[in-house]
Length: 211
Image 1: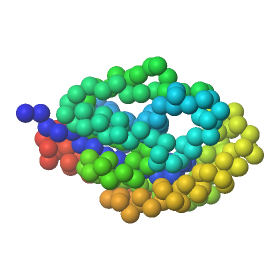
Image 2: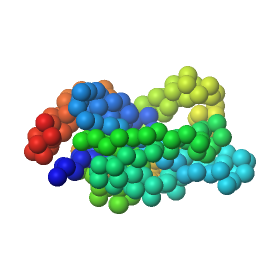
Image 3: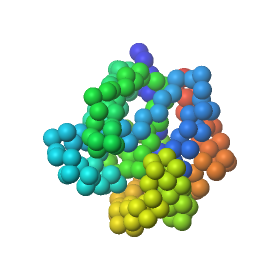
């Protein structure tokens, strides 16, 4: 009988460094059976809406995500079944026709701003992490990313942060910290915390005889 894969949730605000933490953990297990599953791929399909309506999408709200599909896919992966991960196209604010075939692995790292918000998701996790970074660092990182990678102006990034990102963080993301087993300050810069996570994951894998 195949062993049930380990599911690790990594949450935190935009710009907190949760992706860096996820990649750092993932890289420590290169050569082992591990995969990353990003919540950002699971924004709802909005093809039925006019483009003007899609432009109003609040990507920091829990209702923006197709959590039912994400849960279905995690359950499939833990049952050693292949999934077809959706691909979201931000240029048209809906899913593209492409999918990514994902093979089941022994360790599944689920990363996203709101992966700890839904109790059904939390119940699927063996370990829950929250990357906790000060708001000033998060806005600076978001500014740098959106200007360099997405060609946005400083004014547009700040306006979105003040009107949407910050209130959504305070209302929905920050409260999920209480569900975390471990809180990691400063994201990917916290080498000690990452090393501890890697050691803990190795212990769980050994207990389940994966290693």
